[in-house]
Image 1 (tube, helix red, strand yellow):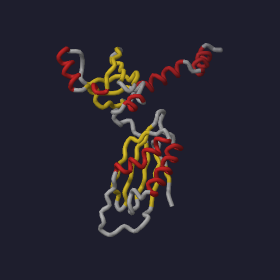
Image 2 (cartoon, one colour):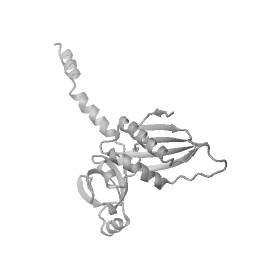
Image 3 (cartoon, one colour):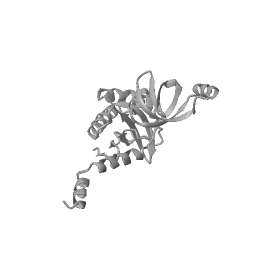
Image 4 (cartoon, helix red, strand yellow):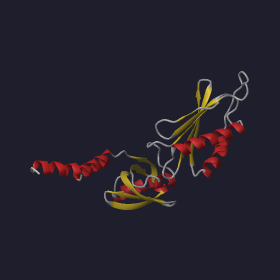
Length: 214
């Protein structure tokens, strides 16, 4: 019998029992490449991207962690359905061997490095920190054009490159010109939203009328 639980970021967890007793002392080597080949077509059919397959030991169990993503994010319902389909496929092929394992599906956190065109596309509008490659660094040092590591807002991204806004100026980089990007947390933008919301709230008008004696 399987269990599903979801917590925090979109995540689905499923515990699987063993199908047959494992032989004592038998080493079970799990092929991550084979798992990827089994799992990826299922996720692709659901319009999900497979970002990573990780296998770890947890006592006598193994933990199979699968990270997926999609344009617009991954819903809890999609995560649960993907968990069911992936689990059934793995068990049908006995891809995790005889030992029990736990399957965990989750979406990437904010600390996931931006390395693929789809990562940059999904970061449009976000503030990122990114280091320029050595080639571009050498060029900038020679010309004094600017820093090698920058904070910039992602304006656009396609298969060829990324358009960044740096200090109000827009520049397009090819992916080979950029190292991994990191999305930055922007608390200030939340404060600005709160301030603008308070300024025009109906309660402010009511307080002004009370002060005027109306």
